[in-house]
Length: 466
Image (cartoon, rainbow, N blue to C red; front, side):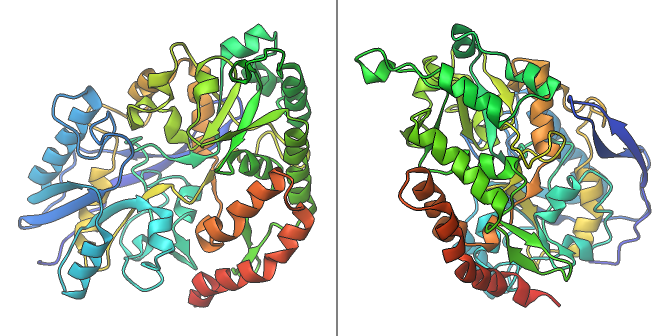
Protein backbone atom coordinates (compact mmCIF):
# COMPACT_ATOMS: atom_id res chain seq x y z
CA UNK A 1 0.00 0.00 0.00
CA UNK A 2 1.39 3.37 -0.91
CA UNK A 3 2.26 5.80 1.82
CA UNK A 4 -0.82 7.61 3.02
CA UNK A 5 -0.80 11.37 3.34
CA UNK A 6 -2.98 12.01 6.35
CA UNK A 7 -4.35 15.52 6.83
CA UNK A 8 -5.49 16.31 10.34
CA UNK A 9 -9.27 16.35 10.41
CA UNK A 10 -9.97 17.02 14.00
CA UNK A 11 -9.85 19.85 16.45
CA UNK A 12 -10.33 18.71 19.99
CA UNK A 13 -12.44 20.67 22.39
CA UNK A 14 -13.46 19.81 25.89
CA UNK A 15 -16.88 20.38 27.36
CA UNK A 16 -18.57 19.35 30.56
CA UNK A 17 -21.82 17.60 30.01
CA UNK A 18 -24.35 17.00 32.73
CA UNK A 19 -26.24 13.77 32.33
CA UNK A 20 -26.71 12.52 35.86
CA UNK A 21 -27.11 13.65 39.41
CA UNK A 22 -23.33 13.60 39.84
CA UNK A 23 -21.62 15.72 37.19
CA UNK A 24 -18.76 14.01 35.35
CA UNK A 25 -16.39 15.63 32.91
CA UNK A 26 -16.54 14.08 29.47
CA UNK A 27 -14.14 14.65 26.61
CA UNK A 28 -16.06 15.53 23.47
CA UNK A 29 -14.34 16.13 20.14
CA UNK A 30 -15.53 18.52 17.48
CA UNK A 31 -15.26 17.30 13.89
CA UNK A 32 -15.92 18.64 10.43
CA UNK A 33 -16.73 15.47 8.49
CA UNK A 34 -17.33 17.51 5.33
CA UNK A 35 -13.60 18.14 4.96
CA UNK A 36 -12.11 15.64 2.54
CA UNK A 37 -8.50 14.56 3.02
CA UNK A 38 -6.33 14.66 -0.09
CA UNK A 39 -4.65 11.71 -1.73
CA UNK A 40 -5.94 9.03 0.63
CA UNK A 41 -6.75 5.96 -1.41
CA UNK A 42 -6.65 2.55 0.25
CA UNK A 43 -6.71 0.92 -3.17
CA UNK A 44 -9.54 -1.51 -2.43
CA UNK A 45 -8.11 -2.70 0.88
CA UNK A 46 -10.46 -5.17 2.64
CA UNK A 47 -11.00 -3.97 6.20
CA UNK A 48 -12.42 -6.88 8.21
CA UNK A 49 -14.33 -6.47 11.47
CA UNK A 50 -15.16 -9.63 13.41
CA UNK A 51 -17.21 -9.52 16.58
CA UNK A 52 -18.49 -11.55 19.47
CA UNK A 53 -21.87 -10.15 20.53
CA UNK A 54 -24.65 -10.80 22.99
CA UNK A 55 -28.17 -11.69 21.95
CA UNK A 56 -29.24 -12.74 18.49
CA UNK A 57 -26.71 -10.59 16.65
CA UNK A 58 -29.46 -8.74 14.79
CA UNK A 59 -30.46 -6.30 17.52
CA UNK A 60 -30.45 -2.54 17.26
CA UNK A 61 -26.78 -2.26 18.07
CA UNK A 62 -25.23 -5.24 16.32
CA UNK A 63 -22.07 -4.49 14.34
CA UNK A 64 -23.48 -6.35 11.35
CA UNK A 65 -27.18 -5.39 11.40
CA UNK A 66 -29.83 -6.40 8.91
CA UNK A 67 -30.83 -3.61 6.58
CA UNK A 68 -34.16 -2.13 7.60
CA UNK A 69 -34.14 -3.66 11.10
CA UNK A 70 -34.09 -0.24 12.76
CA UNK A 71 -32.92 3.33 12.27
CA UNK A 72 -29.56 3.20 13.99
CA UNK A 73 -28.65 -0.11 12.40
CA UNK A 74 -29.26 1.50 9.01
CA UNK A 75 -27.17 4.49 10.04
CA UNK A 76 -24.29 2.16 10.84
CA UNK A 77 -24.64 0.52 7.44
CA UNK A 78 -24.63 4.00 5.91
CA UNK A 79 -21.42 4.83 7.77
CA UNK A 80 -19.78 1.68 6.42
CA UNK A 81 -20.85 2.62 2.89
CA UNK A 82 -19.68 6.23 3.22
CA UNK A 83 -16.33 5.04 4.57
CA UNK A 84 -15.91 2.60 1.68
CA UNK A 85 -16.61 5.32 -0.88
CA UNK A 86 -14.49 7.95 0.86
CA UNK A 87 -11.33 5.85 1.10
CA UNK A 88 -11.73 3.22 -1.63
CA UNK A 89 -11.95 0.40 0.89
CA UNK A 90 -14.18 -2.64 1.37
CA UNK A 91 -15.53 -3.19 4.89
CA UNK A 92 -16.35 -6.83 5.65
CA UNK A 93 -18.21 -7.79 8.84
CA UNK A 94 -18.06 -11.28 10.31
CA UNK A 95 -20.35 -12.39 13.15
CA UNK A 96 -18.44 -14.28 15.82
CA UNK A 97 -14.74 -14.85 16.45
CA UNK A 98 -12.85 -18.08 15.83
CA UNK A 99 -9.61 -17.70 17.80
CA UNK A 100 -8.26 -21.00 16.50
CA UNK A 101 -8.73 -19.71 12.97
CA UNK A 102 -7.10 -16.42 13.96
CA UNK A 103 -3.98 -18.22 15.22
CA UNK A 104 -3.86 -20.51 12.19
CA UNK A 105 -4.08 -17.53 9.83
CA UNK A 106 -1.50 -15.61 11.83
CA UNK A 107 1.05 -18.43 11.81
CA UNK A 108 0.57 -18.73 8.04
CA UNK A 109 1.17 -15.04 7.49
CA UNK A 110 -2.48 -14.39 6.61
CA UNK A 111 -4.78 -11.72 8.01
CA UNK A 112 -7.86 -12.94 9.87
CA UNK A 113 -9.25 -9.50 10.72
CA UNK A 114 -8.32 -5.85 11.14
CA UNK A 115 -10.53 -5.30 14.17
CA UNK A 116 -11.63 -7.98 16.61
CA UNK A 117 -14.43 -7.08 19.00
CA UNK A 118 -13.75 -9.45 21.89
CA UNK A 119 -13.92 -9.87 25.67
CA UNK A 120 -10.94 -8.77 27.74
CA UNK A 121 -10.46 -12.25 29.15
CA UNK A 122 -10.28 -13.83 25.69
CA UNK A 123 -7.47 -11.46 24.73
CA UNK A 124 -5.42 -11.02 27.92
CA UNK A 125 -5.90 -14.42 29.56
CA UNK A 126 -4.85 -16.14 26.34
CA UNK A 127 -1.75 -13.97 26.17
CA UNK A 128 -2.50 -12.52 22.73
CA UNK A 129 -1.25 -9.09 23.75
CA UNK A 130 1.63 -10.33 25.88
CA UNK A 131 2.79 -12.54 22.99
CA UNK A 132 2.73 -9.73 20.44
CA UNK A 133 -0.35 -10.79 18.47
CA UNK A 134 -2.00 -7.35 18.80
CA UNK A 135 -1.07 -3.83 17.70
CA UNK A 136 -1.00 -1.13 20.33
CA UNK A 137 -3.34 1.66 19.25
CA UNK A 138 -0.97 4.02 21.04
CA UNK A 139 1.68 3.17 18.40
CA UNK A 140 -0.63 4.52 15.70
CA UNK A 141 -1.09 8.10 14.60
CA UNK A 142 -4.39 8.42 16.47
CA UNK A 143 -5.54 10.86 19.12
CA UNK A 144 -6.65 8.18 21.57
CA UNK A 145 -7.74 10.75 24.13
CA UNK A 146 -10.07 12.75 21.86
CA UNK A 147 -13.20 10.95 23.08
CA UNK A 148 -14.33 8.79 20.18
CA UNK A 149 -12.31 5.78 21.34
CA UNK A 150 -13.78 5.62 24.84
CA UNK A 151 -13.33 7.18 28.26
CA UNK A 152 -9.91 7.33 29.86
CA UNK A 153 -10.83 4.39 32.09
CA UNK A 154 -12.00 2.40 29.09
CA UNK A 155 -8.61 2.95 27.48
CA UNK A 156 -7.01 1.82 30.73
CA UNK A 157 -8.74 -1.54 30.30
CA UNK A 158 -6.42 -2.24 27.39
CA UNK A 159 -3.25 -0.88 28.89
CA UNK A 160 -0.08 -2.90 29.35
CA UNK A 161 2.70 -0.70 30.64
CA UNK A 162 2.63 2.48 28.56
CA UNK A 163 0.83 0.90 25.61
CA UNK A 164 -2.94 0.90 24.94
CA UNK A 165 -4.41 -2.07 23.09
CA UNK A 166 -8.19 -1.65 23.25
CA UNK A 167 -10.74 0.95 22.17
CA UNK A 168 -14.51 1.28 21.94
CA UNK A 169 -16.68 3.15 19.43
CA UNK A 170 -17.91 5.51 22.12
CA UNK A 171 -20.26 7.64 20.01
CA UNK A 172 -21.89 4.63 18.43
CA UNK A 173 -23.04 3.49 21.85
CA UNK A 174 -23.08 -0.09 20.67
CA UNK A 175 -22.36 -2.72 21.41
CA UNK A 176 -22.99 -1.02 24.74
CA UNK A 177 -20.21 -0.55 27.27
CA UNK A 178 -20.63 -3.70 29.34
CA UNK A 179 -19.90 -2.77 32.95
CA UNK A 180 -20.45 -4.74 36.16
CA UNK A 181 -22.22 -4.63 38.48
CA UNK A 182 -25.33 -2.99 37.12
CA UNK A 183 -28.27 -2.91 39.53
CA UNK A 184 -31.96 -2.67 38.70
CA UNK A 185 -34.94 -2.13 40.98
CA UNK A 186 -38.58 -3.12 40.72
CA UNK A 187 -40.83 -0.11 41.55
CA UNK A 188 -43.85 -2.36 42.25
CA UNK A 189 -42.09 -4.39 44.95
CA UNK A 190 -40.73 -1.25 46.58
CA UNK A 191 -44.18 0.37 46.46
CA UNK A 192 -45.89 -2.64 48.01
CA UNK A 193 -43.57 -2.39 51.02
CA UNK A 194 -43.75 1.42 51.04
CA UNK A 195 -40.00 1.79 50.56
CA UNK A 196 -38.31 4.95 49.22
CA UNK A 197 -37.26 5.29 45.60
CA UNK A 198 -33.50 4.63 45.25
CA UNK A 199 -33.24 7.46 42.69
CA UNK A 200 -34.46 9.92 45.32
CA UNK A 201 -32.18 8.42 47.96
CA UNK A 202 -29.19 8.74 45.64
CA UNK A 203 -30.08 12.35 44.84
CA UNK A 204 -30.21 13.10 48.58
CA UNK A 205 -26.90 11.30 49.21
CA UNK A 206 -28.63 8.59 51.25
CA UNK A 207 -28.29 5.58 48.95
CA UNK A 208 -25.88 3.68 51.19
CA UNK A 209 -25.37 0.34 52.91
CA UNK A 210 -27.30 1.33 56.04
CA UNK A 211 -30.36 2.38 54.04
CA UNK A 212 -30.16 -0.76 51.91
CA UNK A 213 -29.96 -2.97 54.99
CA UNK A 214 -33.10 -1.36 56.40
CA UNK A 215 -34.90 -2.04 53.14
CA UNK A 216 -33.77 -5.67 53.21
CA UNK A 217 -35.21 -6.06 56.71
CA UNK A 218 -38.57 -4.57 55.74
CA UNK A 219 -39.00 -6.49 52.49
CA UNK A 220 -38.30 -9.99 53.81
CA UNK A 221 -41.65 -11.81 53.97
CA UNK A 222 -41.66 -15.58 54.56
CA UNK A 223 -45.22 -15.81 55.91
CA UNK A 224 -46.59 -17.82 52.99
CA UNK A 225 -46.10 -21.59 53.39
CA UNK A 226 -45.20 -21.72 49.70
CA UNK A 227 -41.52 -20.74 49.51
CA UNK A 228 -41.94 -19.75 45.87
CA UNK A 229 -44.14 -16.85 47.08
CA UNK A 230 -41.68 -15.43 49.60
CA UNK A 231 -40.50 -11.88 48.97
CA UNK A 232 -37.07 -10.38 49.57
CA UNK A 233 -35.02 -7.33 48.65
CA UNK A 234 -32.16 -8.89 46.68
CA UNK A 235 -30.34 -12.11 45.94
CA UNK A 236 -26.82 -13.37 45.34
CA UNK A 237 -25.97 -16.01 42.77
CA UNK A 238 -23.36 -18.42 41.46
CA UNK A 239 -21.57 -15.41 40.00
CA UNK A 240 -20.36 -12.97 42.70
CA UNK A 241 -22.01 -9.80 41.38
CA UNK A 242 -23.40 -8.86 44.79
CA UNK A 243 -20.02 -9.40 46.43
CA UNK A 244 -18.26 -7.34 43.78
CA UNK A 245 -20.84 -4.58 44.21
CA UNK A 246 -20.04 -4.39 47.91
CA UNK A 247 -16.29 -4.37 47.30
CA UNK A 248 -16.32 -1.71 44.59
CA UNK A 249 -18.78 0.48 46.51
CA UNK A 250 -16.38 0.50 49.47
CA UNK A 251 -13.43 1.69 47.39
CA UNK A 252 -11.89 -1.77 47.02
CA UNK A 253 -10.04 -3.00 43.94
CA UNK A 254 -8.82 -6.47 43.03
CA UNK A 255 -5.43 -5.04 42.15
CA UNK A 256 -3.83 -1.60 41.90
CA UNK A 257 -1.04 0.02 39.92
CA UNK A 258 1.64 1.19 42.38
CA UNK A 259 4.00 4.16 42.08
CA UNK A 260 6.48 2.07 40.09
CA UNK A 261 3.78 1.19 37.56
CA UNK A 262 3.58 -2.42 38.71
CA UNK A 263 0.30 -4.20 39.36
CA UNK A 264 -0.15 -5.47 42.92
CA UNK A 265 -2.80 -7.57 44.68
CA UNK A 266 -5.14 -5.33 46.68
CA UNK A 267 -7.86 -7.46 48.33
CA UNK A 268 -6.06 -7.82 51.66
CA UNK A 269 -7.38 -4.55 53.10
CA UNK A 270 -9.71 -3.41 55.92
CA UNK A 271 -12.12 -2.04 53.32
CA UNK A 272 -12.37 -5.43 51.61
CA UNK A 273 -13.02 -7.21 54.90
CA UNK A 274 -15.69 -4.66 55.77
CA UNK A 275 -17.43 -5.23 52.44
CA UNK A 276 -17.46 -9.00 52.77
CA UNK A 277 -18.62 -8.82 56.39
CA UNK A 278 -21.54 -6.69 55.18
CA UNK A 279 -22.56 -9.21 52.53
CA UNK A 280 -22.10 -12.19 54.81
CA UNK A 281 -24.17 -10.56 57.54
CA UNK A 282 -27.07 -10.00 55.14
CA UNK A 283 -26.83 -13.59 53.89
CA UNK A 284 -26.60 -15.13 57.37
CA UNK A 285 -29.77 -13.31 58.43
CA UNK A 286 -31.50 -14.42 55.25
CA UNK A 287 -32.01 -10.79 54.24
CA UNK A 288 -30.56 -11.55 50.83
CA UNK A 289 -31.40 -14.88 49.20
CA UNK A 290 -29.30 -17.40 47.29
CA UNK A 291 -30.73 -17.34 43.76
CA UNK A 292 -28.49 -20.10 42.49
CA UNK A 293 -28.37 -19.42 38.76
CA UNK A 294 -27.06 -15.96 37.83
CA UNK A 295 -29.91 -15.66 35.29
CA UNK A 296 -32.66 -16.42 37.81
CA UNK A 297 -34.67 -13.23 37.44
CA UNK A 298 -38.03 -14.94 38.08
CA UNK A 299 -38.54 -13.40 41.55
CA UNK A 300 -37.73 -9.95 40.13
CA UNK A 301 -40.14 -10.43 37.23
CA UNK A 302 -42.88 -11.75 39.53
CA UNK A 303 -42.59 -8.73 41.88
CA UNK A 304 -41.18 -10.86 44.71
CA UNK A 305 -37.75 -9.25 44.63
CA UNK A 306 -36.86 -5.57 44.63
CA UNK A 307 -33.32 -5.62 43.16
CA UNK A 308 -31.35 -7.62 40.60
CA UNK A 309 -27.66 -7.46 39.61
CA UNK A 310 -25.69 -8.57 36.57
CA UNK A 311 -23.60 -7.16 33.73
CA UNK A 312 -25.14 -4.04 32.17
CA UNK A 313 -26.11 -5.83 28.95
CA UNK A 314 -28.81 -7.73 30.86
CA UNK A 315 -30.86 -4.57 31.18
CA UNK A 316 -30.60 -3.40 27.56
CA UNK A 317 -33.23 -4.53 25.08
CA UNK A 318 -30.73 -3.87 22.31
CA UNK A 319 -28.46 -6.62 23.64
CA UNK A 320 -30.76 -9.59 23.12
CA UNK A 321 -34.30 -10.91 23.31
CA UNK A 322 -33.75 -12.81 26.56
CA UNK A 323 -32.98 -9.70 28.62
CA UNK A 324 -35.00 -7.95 31.31
CA UNK A 325 -36.88 -5.74 28.86
CA UNK A 326 -38.51 -8.78 27.28
CA UNK A 327 -39.36 -10.56 30.53
CA UNK A 328 -40.67 -7.79 32.77
CA UNK A 329 -44.26 -6.80 31.98
CA UNK A 330 -43.93 -3.34 33.49
CA UNK A 331 -41.08 -0.90 34.01
CA UNK A 332 -37.83 -1.52 35.81
CA UNK A 333 -35.25 1.10 36.75
CA UNK A 334 -31.45 1.38 36.88
CA UNK A 335 -29.42 2.35 39.93
CA UNK A 336 -25.90 1.72 41.21
CA UNK A 337 -24.97 -0.44 44.22
CA UNK A 338 -25.44 1.51 47.48
CA UNK A 339 -22.32 3.34 48.65
CA UNK A 340 -20.19 1.80 51.40
CA UNK A 341 -18.68 3.60 54.42
CA UNK A 342 -15.30 3.97 52.67
CA UNK A 343 -16.80 4.69 49.26
CA UNK A 344 -17.76 7.97 47.69
CA UNK A 345 -21.12 8.98 46.28
CA UNK A 346 -19.24 10.78 43.49
CA UNK A 347 -16.77 7.98 42.80
CA UNK A 348 -16.84 5.01 40.40
CA UNK A 349 -19.89 2.76 40.64
CA UNK A 350 -18.88 -0.08 38.34
CA UNK A 351 -15.95 -1.60 36.47
CA UNK A 352 -14.89 -2.84 33.08
CA UNK A 353 -14.40 -6.48 33.92
CA UNK A 354 -13.66 -10.00 32.80
CA UNK A 355 -16.37 -10.13 30.10
CA UNK A 356 -16.32 -6.52 28.90
CA UNK A 357 -15.91 -6.26 25.13
CA UNK A 358 -13.54 -3.94 23.26
CA UNK A 359 -12.00 -3.58 19.82
CA UNK A 360 -8.50 -5.02 19.32
CA UNK A 361 -6.21 -4.83 16.27
CA UNK A 362 -4.24 -7.94 15.27
CA UNK A 363 -0.56 -7.22 14.69
CA UNK A 364 -0.72 -8.30 11.04
CA UNK A 365 -3.43 -5.77 10.19
CA UNK A 366 -2.40 -2.56 8.44
CA UNK A 367 -1.64 0.31 10.82
CA UNK A 368 -2.04 2.93 8.08
CA UNK A 369 -5.51 1.61 7.36
CA UNK A 370 -6.42 1.99 11.03
CA UNK A 371 -4.97 5.51 11.16
CA UNK A 372 -7.03 6.50 8.13
CA UNK A 373 -10.33 4.79 8.85
CA UNK A 374 -10.86 4.88 12.61
CA UNK A 375 -11.06 8.70 13.05
CA UNK A 376 -13.84 8.79 10.44
CA UNK A 377 -15.48 5.44 11.11
CA UNK A 378 -15.94 5.99 14.88
CA UNK A 379 -17.51 9.44 14.66
CA UNK A 380 -21.19 9.84 15.65
CA UNK A 381 -23.34 8.10 13.04
CA UNK A 382 -24.86 9.96 10.07
CA UNK A 383 -27.46 12.45 11.27
CA UNK A 384 -26.20 12.34 14.86
CA UNK A 385 -23.92 14.67 16.80
CA UNK A 386 -21.82 14.47 19.94
CA UNK A 387 -24.76 16.11 21.73
CA UNK A 388 -27.71 13.97 20.56
CA UNK A 389 -26.15 10.61 19.67
CA UNK A 390 -27.60 8.95 22.78
CA UNK A 391 -31.23 9.97 22.18
CA UNK A 392 -32.30 6.87 20.27
CA UNK A 393 -30.38 4.61 22.63
CA UNK A 394 -32.24 6.16 25.57
CA UNK A 395 -35.68 5.88 23.98
CA UNK A 396 -35.27 2.21 23.12
CA UNK A 397 -33.64 0.92 26.32
CA UNK A 398 -34.89 2.87 29.33
CA UNK A 399 -38.22 3.51 31.02
CA UNK A 400 -37.15 6.85 32.47
CA UNK A 401 -34.64 9.63 31.96
CA UNK A 402 -33.37 8.99 35.48
CA UNK A 403 -32.47 5.39 34.67
CA UNK A 404 -30.67 6.45 31.53
CA UNK A 405 -28.66 8.96 33.54
CA UNK A 406 -27.63 6.26 36.01
CA UNK A 407 -26.57 4.01 33.14
CA UNK A 408 -24.44 6.88 31.81
CA UNK A 409 -22.87 7.26 35.25
CA UNK A 410 -22.16 3.53 35.48
CA UNK A 411 -20.62 3.59 32.00
CA UNK A 412 -18.60 6.80 32.10
CA UNK A 413 -17.25 6.43 35.63
CA UNK A 414 -16.38 2.75 35.32
CA UNK A 415 -12.79 1.82 36.09
CA UNK A 416 -10.81 -1.26 35.08
CA UNK A 417 -10.73 -4.01 37.72
CA UNK A 418 -7.71 -5.95 36.32
CA UNK A 419 -9.66 -9.17 36.79
CA UNK A 420 -7.96 -10.69 33.76
CA UNK A 421 -4.61 -10.43 35.56
CA UNK A 422 -5.64 -12.05 38.87
CA UNK A 423 -7.00 -15.31 37.40
CA UNK A 424 -10.43 -14.21 38.61
CA UNK A 425 -12.41 -17.39 37.90
CA UNK A 426 -9.89 -19.58 39.72
CA UNK A 427 -8.56 -17.39 42.52
CA UNK A 428 -11.17 -14.77 43.41
CA UNK A 429 -14.71 -15.77 42.41
CA UNK A 430 -14.85 -19.10 44.32
CA UNK A 431 -13.59 -17.48 47.52
CA UNK A 432 -16.09 -14.62 47.38
CA UNK A 433 -18.95 -17.09 47.06
CA UNK A 434 -17.61 -19.27 49.89
CA UNK A 435 -17.30 -16.25 52.18
CA UNK A 436 -20.91 -15.20 51.52
CA UNK A 437 -22.13 -18.72 52.27
CA UNK A 438 -20.20 -18.91 55.55
CA UNK A 439 -17.78 -21.58 54.34
CA UNK A 440 -14.62 -19.47 54.77
CA UNK A 441 -13.64 -16.29 56.56
CA UNK A 442 -12.75 -13.22 54.54
CA UNK A 443 -9.58 -12.41 56.47
CA UNK A 444 -8.09 -15.87 56.11
CA UNK A 445 -9.16 -16.20 52.49
CA UNK A 446 -7.75 -12.91 51.27
CA UNK A 447 -4.42 -13.55 53.01
CA UNK A 448 -4.22 -17.16 51.82
CA UNK A 449 -4.35 -16.31 48.11
CA UNK A 450 -2.16 -13.19 48.14
CA UNK A 451 1.11 -14.88 47.20
CA UNK A 452 -0.54 -17.07 44.55
CA UNK A 453 -2.39 -14.17 42.95
CA UNK A 454 0.67 -11.90 42.96
CA UNK A 455 2.69 -14.57 41.15
CA UNK A 456 -0.04 -14.80 38.52
CA UNK A 457 -0.08 -10.99 38.19
CA UNK A 458 3.70 -10.89 37.80
CA UNK A 459 3.64 -13.62 35.16
CA UNK A 460 0.87 -12.06 33.11
CA UNK A 461 1.43 -8.33 33.60
CA UNK A 462 4.52 -7.16 35.46
CA UNK A 463 6.99 -9.39 33.60
CA UNK A 464 6.00 -7.68 30.33
CA UNK A 465 6.76 -4.16 31.53
CA UNK A 466 9.77 -2.53 29.98
